[in-house]
Length: 289
Ligand SMILES: Nc1ncnc2c1ncn2[C@@H]1O[C@H](COP(=O)(O)OP(=O)(O)OP(=O)(O)O)[C@@H](O)[C@H]1O
Ligand SMILES: [Mg+2]
Image (cartoon, rainbow, N blue to C red):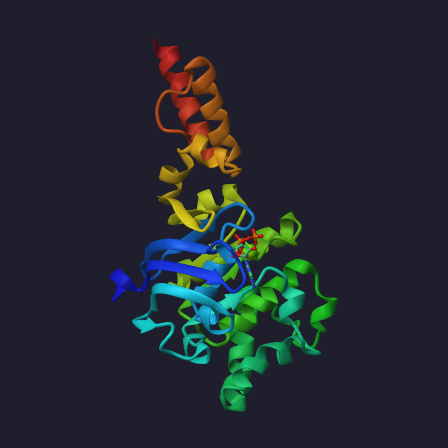
């Protein structure tokens, strides 16, 4: 099962009344427990790809889909979105959009009540997920009175309360300040590490993805143009920059040093720690030379 936990095969999707498909011949596989980042410029198809994972695309849009998406063995067009949602939790970029209740606990209870989960169990899950996202003690607060980072963590808590094995986050930190962003990344990393939750995150923060992601897929104009480990993907500096994507700053620095003066020589670092280690080793070597 883990081999083809999430499998997208030859997926092409075109929204109604548009001239070009939003996704074109996409193929990808994600194993259980992986932390996967989807990056790509505006309009590349990141949101559409996220929405195919619980069947919202194609079911809730007019449009045409060719190909197949299976999640945990379920073909997404053969199952109800509600059923797939038990396996796949979704968090969108703007938490305000997702939050509708008067209190934090009601917000989390909402999805559970509609699924007929008993009151006692709902109470247990509220306390469980608020602990996970670091919002214990906020039960009675109004979601609208929370900071952006707290609201986004509440949206994650509401998604987690269903106990999904897979959490899909579509640019969950785009409206957040650096602290809020950090909070969201920390929660995702902890869920992945401690509960084995499969994380799929559309995200612009390449430095953070270099630290956390097992795999990165790069989308451009609806196609997957690169895929692999962060090291494999970020080593393609020119290809990424040509479609308007950033690489981590340390990677860009090593690339410039190599291109302008032949001064890097070897694999580019993707994190500051790696760059520091490489530079220190070279200093040691040159001191001994
Ligand atoms: N509901 C829709 N109806 C018609 N076309 C759509 C719809 N949603 C998205 N599109 C088009 O599909 C393509 C992919 O859009 P999508 O929102 O998936 O990209 P994205 O990578 O998430 O972009 P962004 O970085 O702006 O979030 C774009 O050309 C977009 O205009
Ligand atoms: Mg989007």
